[in-house]
Length: 97
Image (cartoon, rainbow, N blue to C red; front, side, top):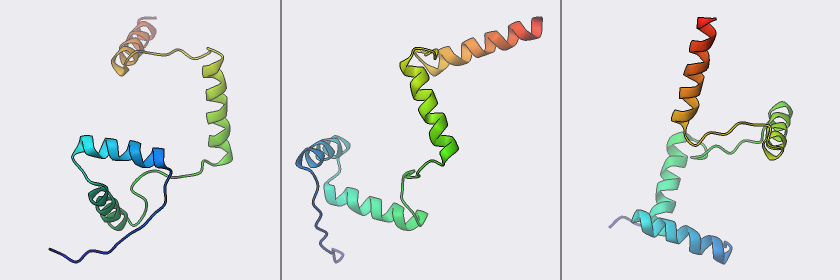
C-alpha cells in the first residue's frame, strides 16, 4: 500500500453528514473523494470546479435575471426539448413570413 498523509479539516456537522451520504451513494469514502479532488486540482492546475466572482456586468445581469424570474417575467420550460421545440417553431414561423 502506498504511503498516505493525514489531512484534518473542520466542517459543519450537517455538511459532513450530507456529503458523506452522497459519497456513500456513489460508493466513495471521504478519503477517496479527497484524493480524487486533489488529483483533479493537480491535473487542472486549479480548482476542479468553476469558482469565479462575476464581473460587475455579469453580476448586474444575474441580478436582473433573478428579479425578472421572481416577478414572473420569464417564460419557463419543463425540459430543454420543450424549449428547443418552441424555438424551432418560432424560427420556422419567421422564415414563412
